[in-house]
Structure formats: structure tokens, C-alpha cells
Image: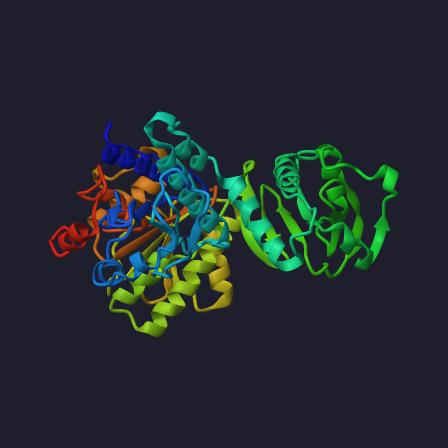
Amino acid sequence: MNEFTFTHMCIKQTAEGMREGLTHFSGPSRTAVIYAIKPKDPISIYDPQNLLAGHEPKFKELYIDSAGWREKTAMGYDKKKFSNLIPEKNLELAGLISYGGRSSSVVYQMWFTEHHPDMSSIGPTERWLEQAVWRFSHDVANEEDLYTGISGSFLKEYATHAVRDYLVDEMNVLIGWDTRMRVYPILEAVLKISRTPEEGSWPKGKLIFVEKRSLAKLQFIAKFPEAERPVLEDVKHIRKLLQTVENSKRKLVADEKTIIGIIKGGSPDFSITAKFKGSYGFLALNSDNICSFSDGCFQSTTRKAKLVQVEEALLDSDMDSEDASTLLKMISEIVHHAARQRHGCAIVVDLNTSPVFISSQCLEHPLDLKNHDELELAKSLSRVDGALHIGADLKLHGFACLLDGHYIPHEHRARGARFNSALRFTAEHENIIAIVVSSDSPVSVMMGGIVLDAKWRLKPSIFCNAPVLLKKWVATSDSEYY
């Protein structure tokens, strides 16, 4: 295998492993990289799923029209060294998270992924990209004879490490490098508690972790003797104690080893908080959520649909902008209610001047959703099998709607009847937006027989098999393909 082929193999395996890991952490994700191995190499790109399409002018300005990126390299090229890495921070491009670096084995690299609109924080994802920079530098330095191929697998399973790395970085900034607070035991305890039921109920309440030197500043309403403090490994005991702070302003307090006691009110200057909300929860640094957790793993989602695709579709429609904004708020309330109550529902948003006919439970008079009580009723009607039918007049025209249609190529059999029926219905009716909320909270928005947040899946890059020169990629963007 020659050097060129080996580099391509490293890039593909790193990118694919990271893509799979980020998909589990944040939902369907893409990855891409722009890089140059040696100081005089032309800059190349690997973007197998068109993540970077639309940013060609910026990349042309940064990497083709200017040599500034190359001149910034402050170290000599040496394939045997990779640990002396100089970071390159986020390029702040719309819709993207990026992180890069320079090392002796790879003079420049910048990795990219999606900036999902429902992320609690981009911090863990930035640490993920940073790890890709380290892994790629390491693999190139090792060469083929010592290459293990482990980078892709490592990045695929990096979620907990990404959360830990972000917490440690922030902790060092906030309270200094001399802290002895270990984060891995905390994260392990949170995940174990989250999947431990007590008398058939999932955990609720707050558990905060603080540094030992902060304990003296807390006002405890109950404190356990030092010799009898429950250890974090005793998950069943802690799960029982969590009942004492359920549905209250009280909080269990722990260091990284034991439960100290119970406080009420404010937290110290630095704390890691696990907010248990039943079958899911949130992990926060001080007052800021950094990720959620459920089913024994961490995820980036806020668990609150942003409905960005619905907003864009309404703005592109002929609706009055004020009515479009009001309609979006109504839809969001119904969707978030269904997600909180953990029941599935479907909503048909009909933007036609005269609403289309849908077989449904009709109403003598449509419900005016501008009226608070009638909007509350619509939320309850969303529990009934079938879809809600909402018009551009901001009224509910029917519920328990039966959506039908003929087979289309983009159906997803694993998603069930509600999802595929809505997809078929939008394929056969113009000016219709369908929103499907699954019982486990994921929200899908579709129009014209396509899931709007998955269009990129339908058109892989023509350069999906191997990296290409960035100059060629930018030139190709002028074609009809892009």
C-alpha cells in the first residue's frame, strides 16, 4: 500500500467511526475534513455526504485564494512526531461545528460535523472533533506497519469520554488545575442511577456533585455521618435516597465518592448536576445543561424539538409572516406536549386556501387555536389515533385523521405506520407539511414525500469514495450537481 492510499484509508475510517458515534449522540450526522499532510501539499477535502456544500466561497477564500493557512504552520514536518499539536478552533460556519489542528505529522487538518439545532451544548462535540485531530495525526505518524485501525472504533464509542473531556476542560477553567475531582465515577453513577427503577418508577429529582472544599459553604438541612455516607457504587441505595428530593427544591449532594447529605436552595460556585426526570434526564455544569441521558447513554439533545424545518417551510409559504409565527408557536406547543407526555401523534399542516379533504372525526365548527382553551383541547385530541388537521386559518379542522397514499421509494419500514402514512400523504398533496412525533420523542418533519431533515441522505457526494483536491471540489460545485 503506498503512502497516498494509506492516508485515504486513515481518513475514511476516522470519518466513518466519528460519523457513527455522533449519529448515536446527536441524531443523523455527517463528517468531513479539509487537510494537507506535508508543508507543500495542495489542500484536500473528504466530504462523502455533502456536509460542506454551500460553503465553497468561504473555503475558496480561506484555502485557495490565500496562503495564510499554510504560512501559519510554525513547526517543521516530521512524520515521527504527532504529540506537539497546535489547535485550530471552530471556523464559525453556519450549521457546522469545526475543530482542527497542526502537528509535525499533519501540517493542517480541520474536521467538521453538523450543528444540530437541538443540541444542549456543542462542547462535547468539539472534544470529539479534537480527538479526531489527535487520532489522525497519530495514525499518519505510525505509518502502515504500525497502523491498528482502531481510531474509527474508538471515535464510534467516544460519547461518555467526550462529555468527560468537556467537563474537565471547563472545570480546569472555573476552579483551576489543582482540583482532584474525578469525573468518570460521576458519569458512571449517573447512568447507573438513571436506569435503576424503584417500585416500578424511574428516578426523579436532582443530585449535585461538588468539590470537597465547597462543602463548608453549603447550608445542609440534613447531613450524613462521615462513616455512614452511601458510596456512589451503591446505586440501589442512592436510588432510594433520591425519593427524598423528588418533586421538591431539595437536592442530594455528593462528592465523587459518597453522598454527603441534602440541601435546599442555591448551589455552590461549581457543581455538576444530574437532573433525573423519569426515563430521561439532563447533565448540567452549574446552571447550563451540557447533554441529556436516557437508556444508559449520553445524548446531545435538549429533548425539545426545535421544528426548524417547519419554520423554514412556513416562511417560504404565502402565509402572512405574523400568522406563520403564530402557527409555529401553536404547532410547537402541541408537539412538546406530546413529547412530554410520551405519546405519539401526527399533525397535518394544510397551507392550501381551501383545506384538502381528509377522512377524519369532523367538527361542527373548527377549533380556533388562537383561543387558549381550544388549543389545550387540541393537545388532548392529539392522543387519539390518527392525525390532527390544522389549516392556514389557524384552526383545527379535524382529528383522528386517516392518512393514505401510494408507495414511495423513500419509505422507512422500521418507523411504523404513522410515519410512512404521513410520508405517503405529503407525496400526493401539495402545500402540506406533516409532523410526526414518536412515543420515544423523535420528531420528523416531511413535505413532498421527503423527510426534510434527511434530504442529504438522498444525494451522496460524487466524491464519496476518496478525498479530492479542494480546488477540484470547489470547481465542481459550479455544476448542476450542487
